[in-house]
Image (cartoon, rainbow, N blue to C red):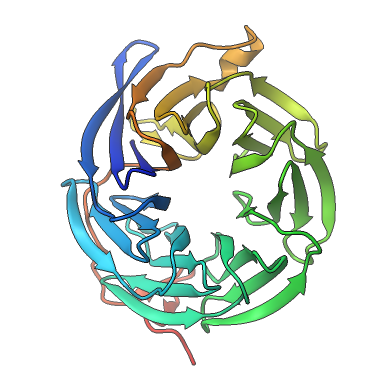
Length: 340
């Protein structure tokens, strides 16, 4: 398993999470790049590929299996605010990369190779965050214009736009894509994905800076309260909390686990990694919250930088699909260029 963190100091950091002893883990640094000329705002990772976006209006790409650079993308004219990969269930290499920027634009890329397909303008002001539906057919965006937008990723155009009344800083689909979450300062709202109907709301102690959904109906949040809080999406109540998980603001959360082969994946809520603005990355076993109030971290690393974001990915070889066409779960051919 690899963890990728970005910082205000323009560095991107890579760590491998490995078992060291029974019931023990180790975070081992395996690369660091001074890849940007200004602060890194967002990172994303999928399979063997990672991406970082910064205030220098560029996106940098990395091959995690060889710890080498894959180049950079320069299709935005404002600083990058959010990045997301889409990987079909039958592939180990991501199919698309979607990026958002402070001028309200969203760029859609084909990752085989990295080719710019389309630029969409879903917002009049900066896009704060984006999330891709598990089907890969649409994306949600929220912006500084206090609006929510839906982007049709197949046709490459905005298909829905509505005013929220307040500015949302974060948006994310749940693991199955049936619901989505929005964050407005301390408040988190849960919505039905089909019609955006409000299902429930819950309010954190302080401003929420990051969210991560889990498969068991849990949403993890972190922020200015320096805690990791798990919310039951159905009831809107707190399932468990790691109080004072960090001495500074939590800026990123990644959910980890082991599969049957002993490798780490990202689809189980037992092992969680978190990063804070003081440069520390910690790994937790959240099951320990049932035994004691504050569990000890399973592993810890200090980058000595002001971290801004965190992403994780199962580390595999850089292997693209053998066929030259993109295929969906049903075996249908998906166009490798967006319809106009």
